[in-house]
Image 1: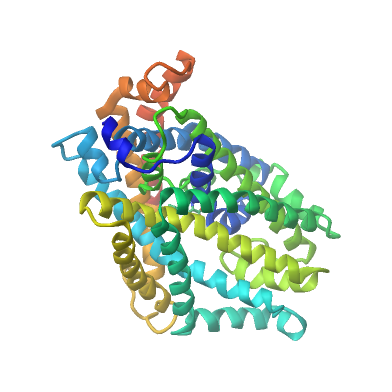
Image 2: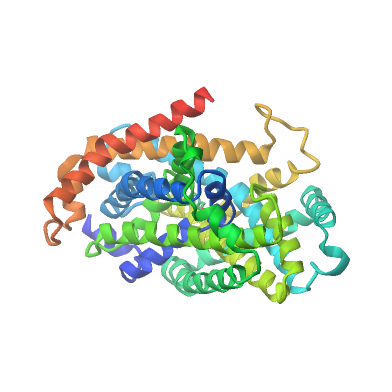
Length: 454
Ligand code: PHE
């Protein structure tokens, strides 16, 4: 196994690895979904539930993915050939490859929307008569249903993603994440400061932080788990692929805790950036996707210095989307270079065309192809539904079963202690093994059952 790792690129150290992994995790899921989910589901109580789930269920699943990636030093498909040669576990690799293909197809379309809105913010378009909600709402729907413009921006976004990935793991992914992740945190903090100093913003903070146990049901728990799963990029091979670039000396517990920490802090900051402003301007907080592209431009147009704030916000959205999309593209790129022995550039070019076509179908499904429905959903919603509600969960379940039961306790212990060279308290190790073998699979099966029933 050692010679394999020597041929591959690897991240410079655990902090760089955490930056790249947090880059994958922090994305559109944090910026629009988390804030309104926490508002709708009991504020501080939801946050407490989310934290417990992130620590006791998602952290073990991230560890599982890190163990597979770092131990095999391989892509999501080849990893099983190294860890369980000749066994049918490779099928998990296929399931985990399908998920990022579907996610990146619609993610790239939304990434394209954020480029368009950044350009609008840069030309100070959300001002004067262009700032009323009806106008902004029709601006958004005219844009997404247009057959050409969103395609152009989807191409641009995917092109940017492809260039970063083609440059390589160290010079592309690592360097980009190392520069933009701290910038992203600085930018979101600037917006938080602006938002919490608006008159009337305290109602928004109350909405997200005031515990309201009456809003907590079993559904809340499952919603929080679903959100944590998507937000932490679990079950779709991205964390396995990134972990395959983590050196044998790095501490996997530290990398996984760091990733969960940054992703959660960013989600909380996004809540503090958005909700106080939403309340200060008397807007309905459960707007969903429209919140980002319709409501926020309206809010920016009302506040003093709203123009620069809009630029910072849409720039952050674009960067957050890019650091996630590069991790999605890397899953397929690593697979094609290692399994089909293609050159990195060729692997990226082939992936680009695949994602361009699938993304184009998602983009057109908002307009000219909106009549094409599968199970009552357009192509965009179908890709979103199948990936987030089926493939990622199934991937997470199978990966935990693989590590918990097929690789077993000994391998978990070896990986978490780096073959005994790191001191990890035995109680902690036993707890992690228990969480991986029993608690995490049970929680995922519970979401499956709940989704099927509802
Ligand atoms: N975690 C990303 C977000 O919150 C989305 C994502 C899912 C990225 C799966 C990679 C893999 O937006």
